[in-house]
Image (cartoon, rainbow, N blue to C red; front, side, top):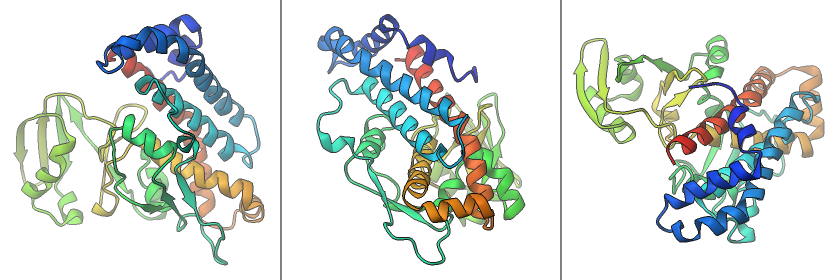
Length: 318
């Protein structure tokens, strides 16, 4: 799998290719098959502009002061998400309620506020729940509200930082020749037997062909690739598989949602909590600082990468 973040975005920047892409996807859906020609023509420009705006906002973020990066990346991700929605929902947006962010944060920050302990709350309407349902097939989030530390824990590239401050929150799992290997030590953190653990993860795996339980590992042979949406498995850019080390962060969601929630809260801080945000960037006093800096470095390339990969999957497997 290519890690080039630009190829599909460039390919879909022309009206002809964008319309052909949408038409082919719509025709695969029995509900929209009869209107594929009309809706692909009507939606191709919005689809192109969503992708173009998202790409330009992320590119701009590479060249501006960190003060502005969260806002640029948050709105860039929002545009990318709307483009993906148009591939599955040709009538989007069906109402103005869908234009809201779909998430909220505390209006007033406590005196001893820390970002890692802050939380966001999921709303019933808006872009996030709509995207989750129609693109990720996730009708209900596994949480109503969540702290920033739990979200950061789910990003594979942040594990080296967690190793310095505490301990990794995700463990990399060997996955070779369709055999996925779990260390038996995971069972201590999950407080489960091997068979109970297998039952817990089975719904998120391709069909299981064989299992082999030893004193040190659980090896599962599967028939197919591990899904990245609506599962507790996460991936780095080299397709290495990661899994939560404890049950409190066993959250079957997409990493796109993780980045959206983190960027939402950071963008709100940078826009409406200028005193705290400016002090963080100037004084670098709190442990919040290295986590925020590292996250912004990661999201700058990983969101375009995740979008590129999602578009590739739709192109080759509409």
